Length: 367
Image (cartoon, rainbow, N blue to C red; front, side, top):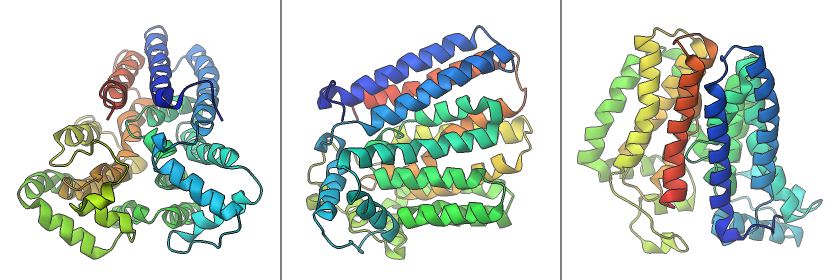
């Protein structure tokens, strides 16, 4: 456990170290060509250092309620270590994993292992999708707005989304389906992108998804409570806490400070980055790639669902069911094909602007 950095400053230090990495990448992009061998050699070294930094810094954070649900996980881990029976009220796979770990390791090692399982599948997926250019994919995923929160707070959700990305990167269909099933068994909410994935297999026309996204905005603005009650009634996510997402009952907000509710225009603007990127690359630049088209379809469907319940407490947790794909939507075509003059410079600028949202909301504003 890292005791050198006071827990109240831990996240702030992390985001400022990320800022240093972003500025390094931005500066290096201005001096080399994207497809130059020197650039690849540099990125391999920087990438490995970055990978180890993220896993170790995230995994050795102090166990504290500063990281919200982390402390709850720690209490559950302690109960298992003391011989408590398996909790079958939640997803059984994660419960079995935690109970097994409680018998052979400390809580500190458990959280380090969780950080590894959160970050390393993204590295493997990036290697599979982009070969020698894996750094750019991993980097933009890590500097995304909610990445830190889902590695330190919403740990199960974070693990599940990383496995989902890993699943999408597999060539063999059975592996894709197996890891998607595993992600759902870790956090039931992944059933939403799973359904979107299945729909995308049968309907490859992106225009209806895009149209639905735009229509969802006025529908949510005019009929927000209706959609919240409707989706809650479907029971897609069978957790007590979900009721709190849609409820005005303050008992569900214990230990939570400065919760923002209402129509989140800031989050909608952030989501629009993915919509604009996908639309621009596919419809304006005519980028043809089966994986990217499917990724865009999944993002649109999941984000449309979130827009309909945008007023709900903790609606960012629903937004993350699409946001975890956002970095890939932004960077994927720029690594795959030559589109622009000085493309590496453009990538550096995009990384800086993309991280600016993360830095402002997580460090400058603190929420």
